[in-house]
Image 1 (cartoon, rainbow, N blue to C red):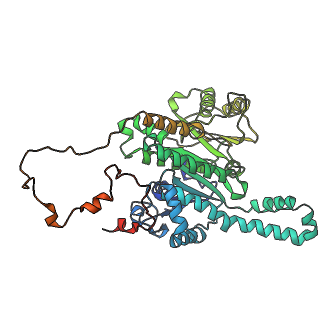
Image 2 (image 1 turned 180 degrees about the vertical axis):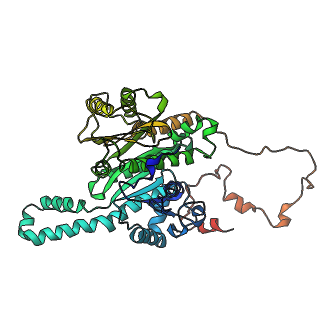
Image 3 (image 1 turned 30 degrees about the horizontal axis):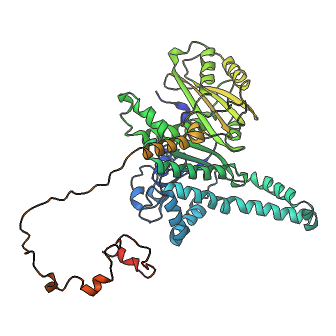
Length: 482
């Protein structure tokens, strides 16, 4: 018995763009979703550094795959950024990809990448900037010119900052918003990966907090979270999923798609309007936190059971570690709009008061600055009841806020306590005759130094001392020769 609501029309039309191997695999998972007529629900695109990695995609059509033809950029985003800066052909190809391929009529473009890789991490940062320059910055400039024409240069000069803000606010209503979904690496990827991921996550978060960039939200999905969950799954649930990466990709795609389709459903007295969902996702900026708790219908006795599911769901996320909304010092993180959505299987008849009870209990403890939107559906749901909570907060998952730095320090402390030994091959001493008599004159071979030359190199001169050597004219290109 399937989830019938996932066949509803989406509340937000989206274009999915994957960067690098991890990002393109995430986008490929969205390309699986099909309408009743077989057409794809989402427009899905993929960009990678070489052709080979794109060949592994299954659902994104070849026409929607673009290669930078760099032969791979390795797992080093800092080096990859440098390559993209210097390689004019790759830079132009990325620009054309953003200008010509990512030109949706949709309201939201989702950018996907794995942090810690080379291509995805570097290109997603470049793509965010390029998308702003091409799609949204001209809208701001256009609105400012209109203001100049409306009120004149003299008036603008009196308070230019005021009119710059006004131009931005007018243009913002026309923005094509960006959603960013990136994955954090495993702890086992090592300290260098953690360091670089921390750096690039900070770049993305800084961009996300800049309202001019038009980034509606960021999801810092966590591969360590997926790995731990996948490892503990029963074997029968791993049959169609090969590894934690595929498991994580499915979780990301299902979470976004289910919310995007459930919020256009109807049939009950308390429905979640698609316009409400659009406000949660598209207004303001910050981390988009999604959680979902599912229980068998036979374990749901009354509305209180569902209310408790909502309250419990607010404490975590299905895509990463929890976000701490209230700090130990009493300060709180700002939370914008909140969505509470239940999907009841048609076999459940528990009334509707549970949704109001959940809203009252959660809102009384949440540092909320926006509106609480609630609703529920009664549709086929695998004989289960699901409680979804989703909100946008100006906060980060625990692992990113403090965890990566601690993991890095732990690695370095362990490394400093390890004594490394250089590998070498022991010499085998032998008394065998080497074929030369003790008085053999090697000068006959034309090698060695004469007495005058030996005087120029005193016995106490250390061959390892380099202070007196002039290396300025050495041609190091010979090191690259075969």
